[in-house]
Image 1: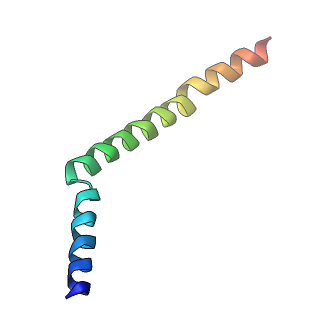
Image 2: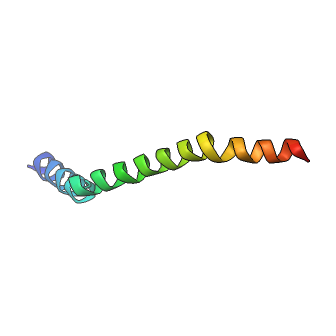
Length: 56
């Protein structure tokens, strides 16, 4: 009887800490936006900065 009660408590606490699907989708969108921003900086901004530094 005690083990089933303990398993039930563990299962309930796990369900409380599980993230909903919307949170995972939102975090994925944040990660995708970060990757796109870093790609844009590396592709377009950094070459201009390096060219300006070389001119000095």
